[in-house]
Amino acid sequence: MGNWFKESNLVNSPLPPSPDVDKNKLLQIFQDTTTSYKYLFFMALLEILKRDNFTSKIIPFDAIVRNMLAIAWYPYKYFKLSFGLVDKIPRELAKIDIESLSLSDSFAFPSHKEKLLKLLSTMSFTSSEIMRYVPYRLLQPFFTESIRGEKDGKKNAIIVNLAKEQFDEIRPFYSIDTTNSTIVMHPAWMEYLYENYELVETFAKWEWLCYMQRRNPSVPNLQSKLFPETYQPGMGMQSRFWKSVIQVESLQCIYSKQRITLDNFSLDHFIPWSFVAHNQLWNLIPAPQSVNSSKSNNLPSVQKYFDAYVDLQHQGLSIFHQLARSSEWKKTIEPYQVDIKIGINEILNKKRLKEQLRLTIDPLVTIASNMGFSRNWEYRG
Figure 1 (cartoon, helix red, strand yellow):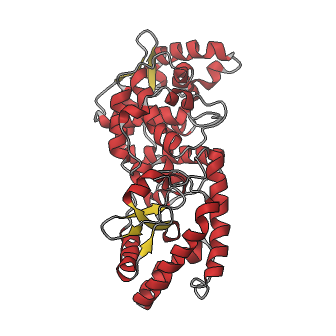
Figure 2 (cartoon, one colour; figure 1 turned 135 degrees about the vertical axis):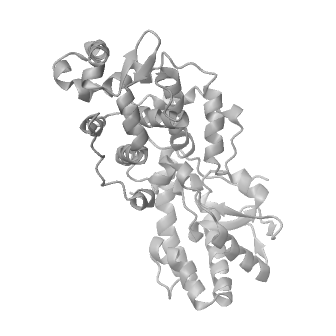
Figure 3 (cartoon, helix red, strand yellow; figure 1 turned 90 degrees about the horizontal axis):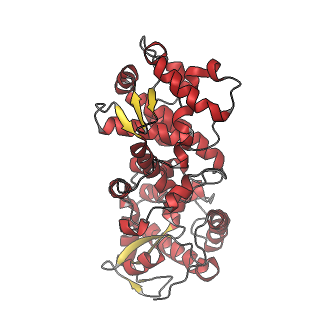
């Protein structure tokens, strides 16, 4: 499901046992989950504890909701992922005045998240529907037998009482102070989460990824859309490729017909990065900075621009083939071979290149459009 989890080597590692807490209860918290709330609540709780260096025992509901929405904002607002038909997270996010954040389309998630949390700190979420059940349901594994057969309307009150009465005996994650709308962390669990933070965080993120994969089965590179703060791709190689081409031959922007120079050069993702979440060379073409900014994360008109996009790709590849060493050429065209399934001896054949790019681009445009990305963009400069 993604390199981040493979590299962490933690996905299949069991959570370590402890004489002070029952780690099996932690492994059960995401069972029978139909909305995103449990995942977001738990990940938000981990973020708050880490941010406060595990010194804050009492955590307000509002603080948890703010962090839940901050985690969900980028996947939903920027990448347009589905959270499920009955999920209320999109409705909560719709209340946020995104315009006041002055967020550009550039990839700068960490700074955006801080701006978002600052804005959310001015809003109250105590009565949010998100918190109607999730703080209580997260404790359900500790009291399974006690609430078996009870109606949903009664479970919250039962769990609140049990968590308070058996706080020292059962040791749930926390107790719930309904009067002040806070949770009170159990010291033993705070210690466990502190000592095993990386393992627990990876466990939660893996479960979150699996949940969202089921709701977005056709979305490419889902991992980098759920955790963009861990994935900040560079485009050094791609930039060098097109700069070397521009230095040899004059290029024209496929959208504006402007001449592209090293002074006004930028790289445009033909299919927006906010959908593909990668920087593969076959999806990158040079464009003036102003044109690229105007296009933003819209889908271009394939009818109007596809042929010119193919021509520019072919032009760039043909020139680079003359300039590059054999080893450099083979490394550069590997994404074309792997992603668009074109043979090394066919890549400079414009007809074959066009056929394979068409087979790749058309489905991506359809899926992105169905997700809500604006299509048929045309330059109006």
